[in-house]
Image (cartoon, rainbow, N blue to C red; front, top):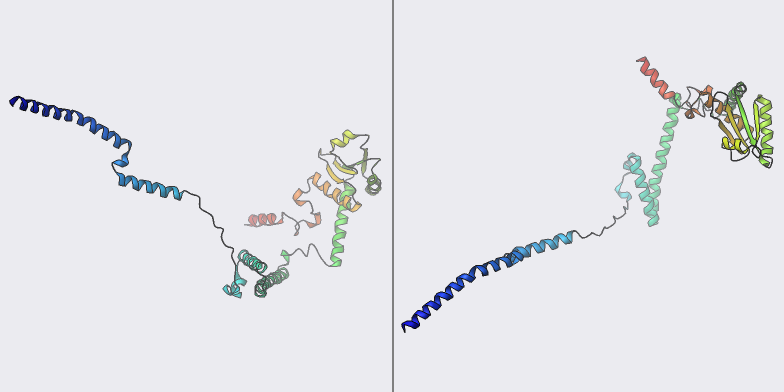
Length: 301
């Protein structure tokens, strides 16, 4: 009996030691599982994160862009005074909105509204024109009428002044300027241009050098001549020629282009002053006049 009790006691002790020996291994295994799958340890928090991740993914999805609706104006929203005093940019937008509304739905009322706003625009333009006429009469220095008359006697005088200045300038340029006339024996246009060139040559006493492009293609290439007839203006004191014409040109146009070419090559005018005559300096057609006036005012101070 005693022996059996001792054996039982020893067996219990061994079982306890085995359980104690296995406990750290079991704990470590559980910790490993929890580390690899943390939501086992805190499943509620894991569920919360999952929901948050779903919400974030949903927010990042591209949104469907809804195009804005077009504005449809109504005349009842504006008074006549409001439309009359509106900034031109805003008024133009309103006017176009009423027009588009009338086109979209061409009812009698919509079309009438559009033409009501259009009538305000017309009257506003008329008011501006009337005030402009008043200002030009009260402040003639702001008007170009004194330098560019519209009456027949004034137009005749202007034409005479222009013609006299051109002829004088061309006559005086004969010693220093000349023309190179490129032509071709198979060019029918050259036959007519030759008559004009010859008349100019006899009238102003200019030297004209005639070049047959079929005999001198290299010279034509030097002056970049690709068509006939062609007229080139040259200046003895400059290496930069000016093209007078490429194709047939009338005597009047030929004279005017030569006149302006002389002034450009001699430095009397710049390209900004290309259309200016000498007698127009200081007038409304002198592009540099505002700068000159400013210098005078500053100099007086």
